[in-house]
Structure formats: C-alpha cells, structure tokens
Length: 138
Image 1: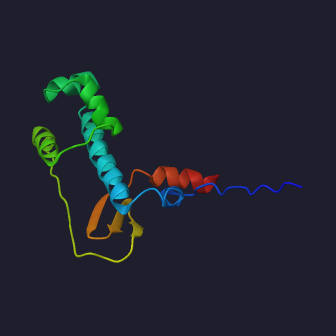
Image 2: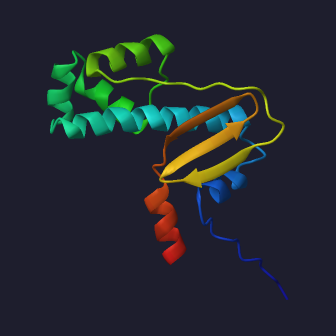
C-alpha cells in the first residue's frame, strides 16, 4: 500500500516563503520584498497619473520595455537608479536600518508589514493582504 502525504497549501506569504527556507537566505527574502515594494510604488504612481506604460515612459524619459521590467520586478535597482526614479516622480524613499536581531519576525498592522531580518528592519505597504484574505476564504 502506498501512502501519499498531502502537502499543505500555503495560507499566507510566510507559509509560502517557509517552503523555500532551505534555499532562500534572509537577504534573498529582504531583497525580493524591497524589489516588490519599489516596483509597486512605480506602478501605483503610473496608475495614479492615469498613464499607459508607453505614456509613462515618455513622461520620465525611459522606454516602455524598461517600465515593464520595473513594474514586474525584473530589474535590479541600484541606489542611484532608485534615487533617479524617485526624483523624477517626486517620491520620497525611506529606508530604516536598526540594530541586529537574532531572529526573523513578521508582524501585521493596518495593511503594513514590518519585517525584521537580522540587521535590517523595513516597513512597506503589504501587497499580499488580498492574497492572504483570498487564501483564508479557500
């Protein structure tokens, strides 16, 4: 008789990330979250301006394909590029770095996520709130 274990479906982003915990470092997770945060800010600003990617590209002197890469997170932003884009869009960029902690802890509050990774703490809008809610309904 063959017994198959049913794999648990991830209920939230933390569960999903835990599936990859052996291959992802805290730095990998933080990097992905920072990339998502900045990509989300660019997309939100474009949508707030009611512009297509093509029009937005003209607005900030970039190409449509580059805007697409920025928005889908397929671009490794340098600090200089982040500053350049933020200046063009009149956006404020704020990083918060605190003393090292010995564990990784994620807490939720008012659609914001505070993620503590050793030596780094950052707070950003939670793009997964709706995903978590939909998963809970399943």
